[in-house]
Length: 298
Image 1 (cartoon, rainbow, N blue to C red):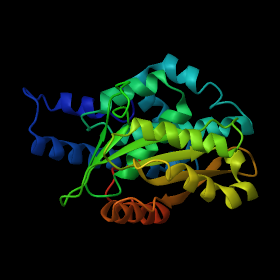
Image 2 (cartoon, one colour):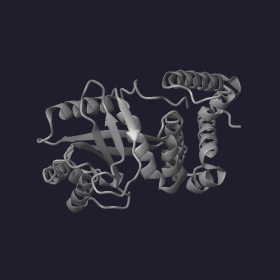
Image 3 (cartoon, one colour):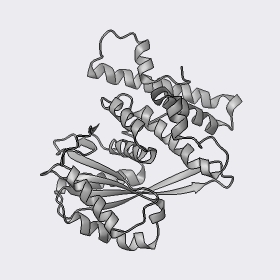
Image 4 (cartoon, helix red, strand yellow):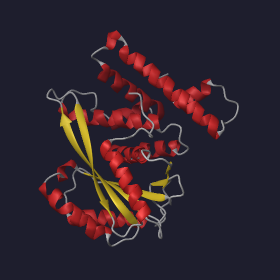
């Protein structure tokens, strides 16, 4: 038993004889989420752990991941996260962030498929896709993680159905490896590949995460033009959201902060309704207005 029970643990304790209706399921999730927030809030207020909240957060994150993936998997994937030194802070940060996303997604129908995906993929890519899923929940509507099909034009990552009669938006997510250099060809090939994965006859979004090493004058001076050249060759990408992360280690090397900025590039041929929704999302991302999205308590 972990310090905080999983949603499955909570439902099991309710001794449900049948699967709850959609309305009842929402009620159960709200009650579970509130109970965990209350539990963690009380835990962090305990005078015996004052000044050690970061350590408790690490424990909660590690235990939650172990509940879904097993101790061996967590130990292997985050082998250096508990060591001393600057080299451990980014893996520790990723472990916490992945645990937060796992907590937040427990009540979605696609959750188990996503757990399976995380188990068999590299952590930076899995974490960025999880971040995108959470970011898309900033807008009202339904966010569904799709299953891999291997079929051209039907192999995108996420489907967004907004309320109010707006068309659905297929989403493709790409994470560029830290070791890859910035070139126009790299960006163009990434956009082209993403376009082939989006459905023909529909217009979607591309979420791209670029390496921190790309940050600099070349990115500032060339990136927008490269995107323009790449996006104008396809009608399937209506906007590109690029995540740009900067890592800020603390002076003692024991903590790390990651600040994320978003570069927004709309296609000048995308439908007006999609562009409006795209810009609305960009503003929410830049201002970090995530009140519609689920929130982890740690």
